[in-house]
Image (tube, rainbow, N blue to C red; front, side):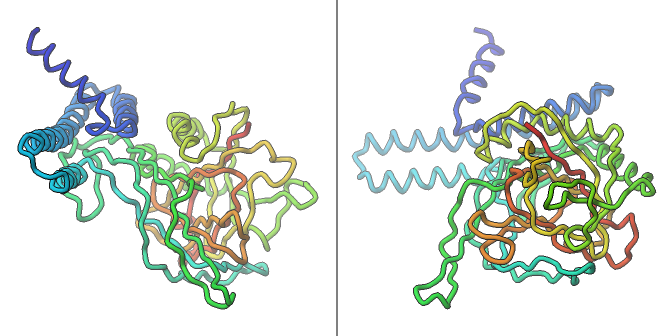
Length: 394
C-alpha cells in the first residue's frame, strides 16, 4: 500500500469511531463544509482557505482525542498484565475519559434562562413595562451540539485556529431545553424546586443561523421597507381572521420578504430532519409555508397562545422564530416564553429564551407560548426587536 492509501484507511477508521467523532459532529461538519462551498463558490481561493482552516482544526481535535484514547488503551493493557486491582483500573479509566472531555472539540453547555412560575399576561391596551424576572440558581444543563473548532467560542474556552476573513459559514449547534419543575410540599404552602429533570425538548435553538452577509442584507431590507409594515392581526375566538386586538397582540408585520424568504427556508430544509428528531416529532410532508418579518417596539407584546389553536391554522405543525436586530441592541424584553404543558400562563413552570442576534428557535405549534413586553426607549423603528418567523404546514 502507498502512504496515501495507508493514511486514507487510517482516517476512515477514525471516522467510524464515535469516541473520535460523534454522529452529530459529523453532521455539523458536513453542514459547515456545504455552507462554505455554497457561500464561497464564486471565489475558489476563499473556499480553499476556509476548507484548509477547517481541516487543520478538525485534524487537531481528532488527533488529541485519538492520543487520549490510545494512551488509555495502552494503560489498560499494562494494568491487565500487571495484576493491579480492578478498582485502580476504574480510576485510570475515569482519568482518561476526563482528558477526552476536555479536548477543544468537546461538548459545550448552553446558558438558558429559567424563571419562577406565575407570569401574568398583559392587560389593557398599554401593557406594563417589563420587569426582569429573578433568575433561579443554575442547575445542570443538557449538552449542546458540538461547536466546530474554527467558530467563535464562549469566554474561557481556548480558541482553535481561525479561518481567514471573508464570508463565514454558520455553525448549527442544536441546543435542547432543560425544564425545571416546581412541586408543592404536603402542606401546599411552600414551593420547592425539585432536582432539575432533563425532559424532551420543547424547543431547539440554533446559533449563527445565517452567514454574516445574509444577516446584513436582511437587516438592510427590513429597514428599507419600514413603510410597508402593517399592524399585526390575530384570529378571533370565533375563527374570524384579520382581527386587531391590542389587548392580546401589539406589533407590526411585513408579508413580502423578497429573496430572504427563500434564503431562510433553504437553511431550514437543511436542518429540519435533525430538529424534528430533537423535538420527538415525526417527519411530515410540508405542504405550505407561512413567513413574515415582525417588528416589535416599545410596549409591544403577544399574549399566551398556541399557533394551531384555530381551525383555520390547524394544519400548522412547526413554528420557527429567527431573531435579528440592529447593532448595538437598543431594546430589552421581547423574550420568547414557553409554558410547561401541565400549566398555563398564570401558573406552572415556564422557560424563557432571550433574543440573540442571528439565532433561530424551533418548537411545535401546539406549545403554549408568549412574547413578553418590549422596552425600547428610543422608539425608533431601526431599534426594534425583529424576527423572521413563520410556520410549516402538514
